Structures are given as C-alpha cells and as structure tokens.
Amino acid sequence: MSVIHLEGLTKRYGEIAANDDVTFEVESGEVFGYLGPNGAGKTTTIRLLLGLIKPTAGTATVLGADIRDRRALTEAKANVGYLPDTLGFDDRLTGRQALDYFARMRGDERREELLELFTPPLDQSIETYSAGNRRMLGIVQAFMHDPDLVIMDEPTSGLDPLKQDRLHRFLEAECDAGKTVFFSSHVLSEVQRIADRVGIIRSGELVALEDIEALLSRGGKRVRIHLGEPVVEERFVTESMIDVELLDSTAQFTYTGEPQRLLEHLVEFEIQDIDIGDPQLDDIFKHYYGDEADSEES
Ligand SMILES: Nc1ncnc2c1ncn2[C@@H]1O[C@H](COP(=O)(O)OP(=O)(O)OP(=O)(O)O)[C@@H](O)[C@H]1O
Image (cartoon, rainbow, N blue to C red; front, side, top):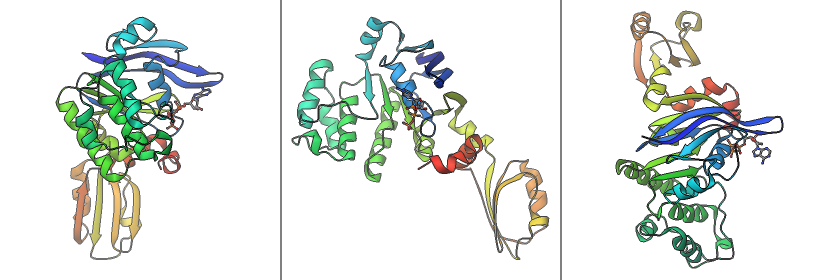
C-alpha cells in the first residue's frame, strides 16, 4: 500500500515552479530519501504534503487522505510525525512544557524511550537551546505518539556525528518495525546509508526515482590503480573512464563500460595494487547536477 502518493504535484510562486508536476509513491515500511541541493523544492513538497500550503495543480494523498481535503488530512495527521526544518515551538517554553503540549494533542507513549536516545535539556527554556538540542526535541516530538508515518525535513542538521549515527540506527529499527519514513536531505552519504529508495529533485522537477542499489549499480565502478610505472594518460585512459584523476603511478576513475573490457585493457599494464568498489552517491549525484553539486553539497 502506498503511504504517500504524489500525482502531478505543482506549486508555483510567480515565475518559480518550486514543485513542477512531481509524481511518485512511498510504500509502507520504506525509508524514502528526498534528495536535492538548496532551493530544489524539498521543503515545498513536505509543506504541501502536510497541508501547510496549497498546491497550484495536481495533488497527493497521505495515509489515504487527499491533501486538498482539510478534514480528511487533519484526521490522517494524527498518525503522522513531522520534524520541520525550523521548529515552530514557543521559545519561552521549556522543552518539557513543549512536549507536554504535544502530548495533550496527540499522545506520548514513547516519550521516555526516545528521551533515552535523544537528550535535550528538558527543564531549560527552548530559547537557550543549541541547534542540536532543538533538533533532538523535534525528533522526540515527531516520534513520541508512535505514528505510522514520519516526515522529516533535513533531520540530522545540527546534530553531532554521534547523535546522527544514533538517529540513523533508530530509523533503521523503526522501518524494520513497519514504520514508514520520508526524509529530505542534501547529505548524500546519509541517504545512501539509510534510504531504501531515493527521489532526486532539481529546480522543482523530479529527475530520478530509484532504489539505492540500482542507482549505485548504474553509476559504474570506482577504480583505484597503482601501476609499477608512471601513468601515461594517452595510453591508459579510455572513453569509458570518467572523473579521472592521475598522479604519478596512481590512477583513479569511475568506469562506466563492460567489466570484461576493463580487465582486457588492464593486462597491458604492470599493476601493483587495485581497488574496485561501488561509487559513492556523491559521484552519481554529480552526474545529475554537474558542477552545481560541488558548490551546493555542504
Ligand atoms: N513562500 C515562498 N515565496 C516565494 N518563493 C518561495 C517560497 N517558498 C519557497 N520558494 C522558492 O521555491 C524554491 C524551492 O524552495 P524550497 O524551500 O522548497 O527548497 P529546498 O529544497 O527545501 O531548499 P533547502 O535545502 O535550502 O531547504 C526556491 O527557489 C525558493 O526560493
């Protein structure tokens, strides 16, 4: 069953199409990564799905509710967790008061369990919180009523590496337990690590929708070779090698051709060391975004 279904979803702001005819589905029990650089349209999709803004054209359903049907969507949202990019908490409240407020609206049966993993200082007012503490409070808030679907906008931003890792492991366990997670990110390694499927959005348009495994396999192989002699570019580099870096006797490249052809080519050289592996999603991402990726990734 599809938990989220977008059909031609479009949102225009004047000349800008923040979302342009976006269509895809998220299935029950999957972790779906929504990837794109700043300004690509990720937050717009999320805000449309939650009924916070209205589509210009097209529509979507969330847990079966049409986002244009206010009443149905409100009912469905009782079973949805939402981590926004900026938390809408009243900053004068303490963390505990903010959680109490949400608990009264939706329940909090998993609050204690979550607070063992994510540890914002509950008795301080939120205005004194660091970015990471705000994010942790948001995570507890999003999951504590044990929703079937959680939608998260850049969930790890502001978290230190330890807490990021903790969130990744938590999300994996949630999905094993049948929950569905939709999250946006511009952090490729994160999407690669935790998502089952990825949608890549660029300038409002969905440019790719794939299993992570398929995306990686289409991206060729990343090869690093150490030769027993300096690499001669004219002799060594073939048309099937892209993103080539040569330094003395070392060559690194992504190989996009037939594996057999690569082996046939390499027997002509004295090879001291070789490493062939899957490319990082970053490399593949560059093929979709070109030079844009370099400046937008951080
Ligand atoms: N309220 C608005 N009025 C006008 N333009 C908007 C508005 N909200 C978003 N946009 C534009 O729509 C486009 C998509 O923005 P959006 O915030 O959805 O991108 P994003 O992928 O979430 O970016 P980021 O990673 O920086 O959060 C951008 O060009 C943005 O300037």
